[in-house]
Length: 415
Image 1 (cartoon, rainbow, N blue to C red):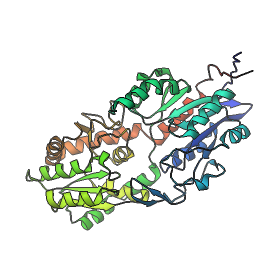
Image 2 (image 1 turned 90 degrees about the horizontal axis):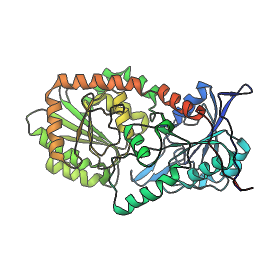
Image 3 (image 1 turned 30 degrees about the vertical axis):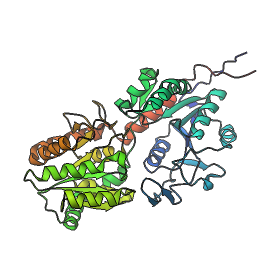
């Protein structure tokens, strides 16, 4: 027989805030401030279950090609627990699992469970626990409908993804392409609760108050005057990010007679090859900053004039969100999932969208933006307005609405 149980999720149950468990692979630097903000909001009782200490403890990031740790106070201000054995999980890019999760959720007894995508076994176990215990299950992911896939990938999406989405009651969506992805695989718009990927507004706001000094100092280190147009690329130096296209594009733009420069923030296995390309194709036009810790990123955004993000595939890059918070115009490829009328990169408002891998058109667009200061100022004002819509407060509100929206329609269990 199939039994059906319902657990209502309401803002207050006997005077106690609704209890929600967040299950995540490891402390991720841009999500931890969101947990803190949700706890401060007070409408939910929140506890985060981490499957790994990576990020708090240094770990080797294969894409950065170096050891990294986020540092800072990632764990302050909200309830959390590292699952037993978390210290032994060194690489959160690989599937993270933990057999103790069901027992820990049993002990906490949440009325709602939130997890990230379906790649990690720990996430799939969280959705299964919610289904078995009548709790509301919510998913966060950055999957977008603008990514190309091979035949095997398309078959997997069509056969596996719809079944996975049926295990979930609601989706904390991050943007337009993300919602189209879910809808294409069977989810209903009524299940969508927009909760933009958060940016650490405290750090960026503090830096913005000191914009002029930071900009002047960093430009002096780079040998730039204030009148030169500085394009910024931020990300891991992998083939997928197509940083080589940005280098070729700035070389093309530089031949237009305007003073343009490109700063590349990030590291990875492709760095030496990219440095050689810059030396041969764009001598004197490209600066490599290497890996920059999150605390040091704001000054780079505040010093730049335009973000360029030419990725061949990038679901919803944090770099675009951070650039918008810093009021930068954006030039992005059509394979970046941040593009949309209610998303970070809005064509005709604060962004130009160019075809991925077409560095010639990218270069022409960079030249157009570099040549027109008024255009840059108008696009900057567009980013400023968009940033006011996609705040931490908006992220918290979407999260809370998703948790409090209702109950599971049914839970199947064996007698």
